[in-house]
Image (cartoon, rainbow, N blue to C red; front, side, top):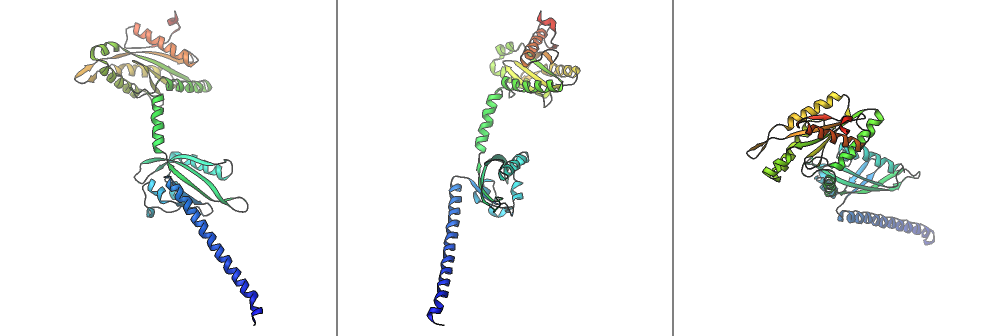
Length: 331
């Protein structure tokens, strides 16, 4: 074989070699690009995840595992393993968010949820991601994204919400939250043709306690009375402080008026028990006014007004008792 015969073969080998080199450089470039991308994301404090959808396998960065208190060797790469870290109350909404994005129902994937750390503590994360690879039919094959620790933000939001909707002294809902809950309960009662009850409660002779023992002692009394009131009702009921020594209670579902009477009697009895402050036993009582929907009012404002009016009648009748609203009180 002479040179002229082997020349085409040599050219073919050279082209093949150059192609392999090019592919190698491209792979290295791609790999370096991904590493730089992941490095940049982790540099921002985020944990990075890379999900092979077709194999249902995922790579989680060291930072993500560290965020949850795990070492690299303690966990595997299965999606099931990491889904088990999601708080049970958030699992359904997370699955829905991922499904909506993969199906095209949602334009982007972003979800806030709680995760369970190795020490069983709870953290909040913001999960973001995007599809980076599809098959020729457009089916998602690979998705990448980040998890950002947002626990501090969530704690701040909770504190701000408490300030907006809870009484700082009594640690029960305030007037705003009570009105919101009453509105919702009234909508339900109207729709289902149910009864509900509003109780307006005022402590008897509380001003005298404040004047005699001081406001600090008065605050202790209010805190203890609020706890007593909560202990007398169901978890579904609402005890709220309107201000000063005035409280309101919402019983959102009432099957029988006798049940309301029993709750009111229990409150009168419990509040009348001596309250120990330092070495002193203080005696307070309460007057309660009760309005029932729909007999005593069909909107939030009227129910509260009529319960308040009944409370004043209870005070006029000797205090330390409960009175239902009556039309005669309007005269």
